[in-house]
Image (tube, rainbow, N blue to C red; front, side, top):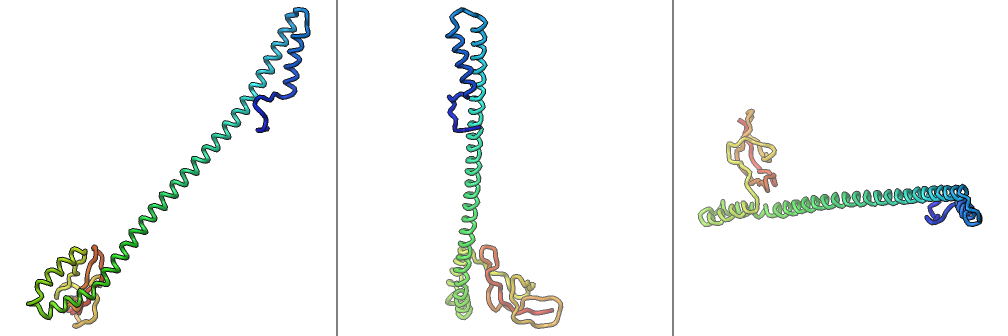
Length: 198
């Protein structure tokens, strides 16, 4: 079907039928009821056919418009879904990057904490207030010490054994050589220990 045709355009054969019907009415001087009736019926048939063609054309155009609208809606929904996925992915990446930065920063502070602990151990009388302040600050930062007192069962996930004494089956922490820390409930650095086998 030719979409470029105007809705008001009538096919040639139907136009000639319509013109013949009009001629029959206008040229016939005698009041012939049959001729007029046939002309009217012919004109009505032509009008019905023309209306049917217009209706088909209109339906075809409406279908095309609906298809185009549905296609645009689908494109919009896909674009919206892609954007939501991109936004979520970006938020996850930002969160992961922020965690990496925090872990890296806190990890760089650990040697300083080790030095302060050694200073406190060497001068416990004068530096006891500093020890309390240090413990409070590390808790506020989300840092907590990994338990490693003498006699605690050795855990390779939490303890890094650098020396082993004895030949028994049970492995226990004998001495803490360097404090380990959790950061936000994850092991930031394992405790360096001497292990005793009993």
